[in-house]
Amino acid sequence: MKTTTKTRFLSLTAVLMLSFSAVAQETTTDQFKGIPVEGEHLTEARNTFIDYHAYILDTGDFKFRKEIKKVKKEPEFLEYASTDNNIRISKYDYLRLVRRTINQSDTKNEFIDRMTEHFPDTENRFTNTLNLETIYDSARPKTFFGRFDELPRVR
Image (cartoon, rainbow, N blue to C red; front, side, top):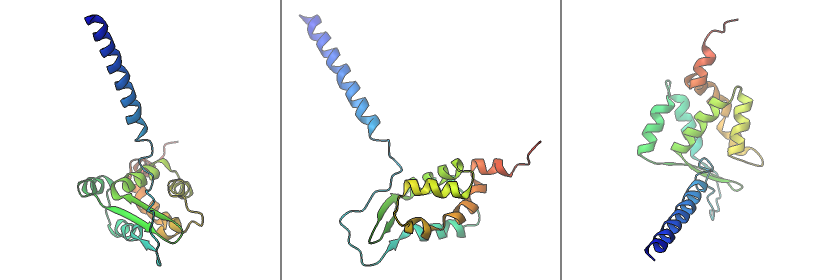
């Protein structure tokens, strides 16, 4: 009798552990998706991404690692809200996304295409207002693969 109860308990525990494990793995698949702000009706566009991009461009020696550590301690959100599209994402996630996307892209056009995948917009108003080419030009040399691009080629 004790063996049957013990076996049932162990099998029940194993099933519960597997189900919790499966649920936990499913929740982190889209960590870089922008959070749409619903229920907001705006009369004018609001875009904190533009101010943050200006800050990145104005900082002469912008380092992603330092900035990511800084914004991780004090969580803030970037918002883009217009009559057509509403996006909200934390600065931490946004910086990680931009750094990763810059590292994965070899050209400006590839970077812009990858960013538009993450922030879909029917008329590209969001990505056009950010001036992503300038961000790519200023941030690429300071990333891991950007440093490799600057090394001389041996032929």
